[in-house]
Amino acid sequence: MNFGKNFVWGAATASFQVEGAAQEEGKGLSVWDVMCQRSGKIWQGHSGDIACNHYHRYKEDVALMKEIGLKAYRFSISWPRVLPLGIGKVNEAGLAFYDRLVDELLSLDIVPWVTLFHWDFPYELYCKGGWLNRESVEWFADYTSIIINRLSDRVAHWMTLNEPQCFIGFGMESGMHAPADQLGRKEILRAAHHVLLAHGRSVQVIRSSAKSKPMIGWAPVVFTAYPASNRESDIAAARETMFAHESCSKIINDRNISVWNNTWWGDPVVFGNYPQDTWNAFGDAVPRIETDDMKIISQPIDFYGANIYTGLEVYKDSNGKTAATIPPAGAALTAFRWPVTPDCLEWGVKLLYERYQQPIVITENGISCHDWPSLDGKVHDPQRIDFLHRYLCSLAKSIKEGVDIRGYFQWSLMDNFEWAEGYKERFGLIYIDYPTQKRILKDSATWYRSVIESNGEVLHSKFRSS
View (cartoon, rainbow, N blue to C red):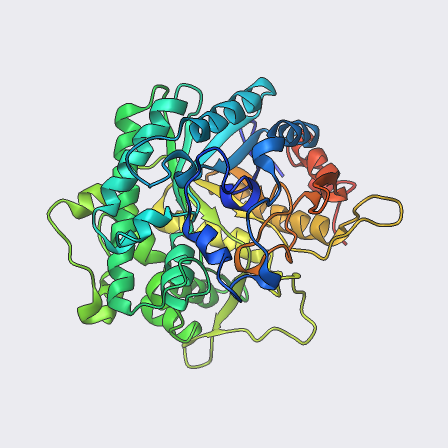
């Protein structure tokens, strides 16, 4: 369980999910603010108007981070809070909030890790075409410049984008998330190309303008497969499922393959080119690439963020074809109905590192549970403790085998607005009673503190899984 002396232990949130203050102090509308106003789009009509009221209670929340023992806090900045119209005049009150938050974190020796975009796209820029408009690349670069100019004297760790597969796939293809569009593949791939360009331009801005030496990454979803056994054939099946278009398409029945393919996002960022097999499969839908596009997209990064929650067990059948294992009846599921598959963390990062040779940070990993205060007033969440224990042990295996893992951010610090699911799903180490905004540290928060204090040593001692 040697995680290394410089391993970063943290937890994460996102601006729209926790801040609230949706219409306060000059903040502009995001596509999620508008989504919440649409009937039937969010579970039970919930909204992010108040959320966890982190905007007003950040000092209390940072104090709880310190109590948990966090070494780092990953949070995102609300683009329309800083730029109400997405471009143009800066909202000083909104920018000042992040000043205060960063200062509060540093005062308690918690390192801020900033994500520039976690889905709350400015509504006014959506009305100008959003990510379909190539101008979005420079919109994002200009926004990045404002944040870097203001915070980079105190912030060194940056992530450009969180889960582009989700805000493109769920937001623009299936319509499950904001802005609830249902576009064709050609439009989807065009928007995705602009998102990748925005990432690259953002990296350029950070590198050229940061006041302290930056550590730059991004935080995509990693669609993960793991082998049913240690046979080379099964390992090859996992590798193909994660990185080969044909295998990936067959395993997930071509569902959202345009945005869920790991290589469509990772290869341009690391290698400077789209994967040829996927490019060929998309045919006439592929995006137009202009001079220097791939050079911009492939700006060097310092770490590859990985959001990993679950995975598929795969194997090679008797005909040499890749197939997915059918889970047995009663297999473990989270409250969100996601399979509990600890091996996905070991193999996901091993295969990701094998392909891209980039230091990896687990930027999200966690579980939604059915949590509530017990009669003793405490929130007992043994399933979360067991889940995190299993996944962290799996991660430790990959480190032992030589994978360069720099840190782990638990999702999430606190229960929050879970997008289209409203407040139904609880992922937090901290319980939020939404009507009163009371915070309660769950048992998992105390357990995680022990993990951090021991740098993971407790994972194979008194907290050992059965």
